[in-house]
View: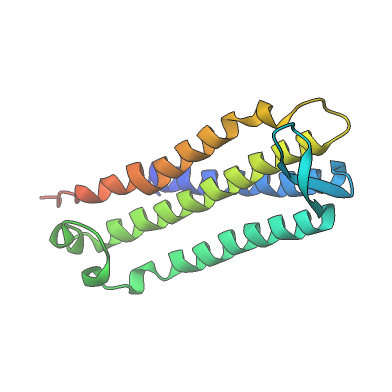
Length: 169
C-alpha cells in the first residue's frame, strides 16, 4: 500500500468519525428550534427543528459516503478514452496507478465533505447553544477553511493528472 493510499484512507475514516461525532453532539446540545439563517442584527430568521437538522445532516453524510464509495469501486470499469484526463496515452500504460490515484481522489472528496459537514455542525451547535456565548460572526473562518478544502480537492489534486507516471525501465 502506498503512503498516498494510506493517507487517503486515514483521512476518510477520521473525517467520518468527526462527522458522526458532530451529528450526535449537535443533536444533543441544540434547542428544539435551530436557527440556520441570521439577519443583520444576529438573530435567527430561518429555523428547523433539531430532528430535521439531524436527519438532513445524516442524509448528507450517508449519501456522501455511500455514493462516492460506490463510484470508487467502479473506477476500473470505466475506459480511459471516456475519462476527462489529459495525457491519456501515458495513463493507459499505467492503468493500475490511475485507478489508485482516482480512488484516493474520491476518498479525498469524501473526507473534505465530511470535514466541512462536521465543522459546520459544530459551529451551528455552538451558535444555537445556550451554554456558549458566540455569535455567527465568530465562525467566519469556516468559509475560508471550506473553500481551501474544496480548492485543494477539486483543483490542486487533479493537477497531478497532467503528469502521467514514467514507466519503469
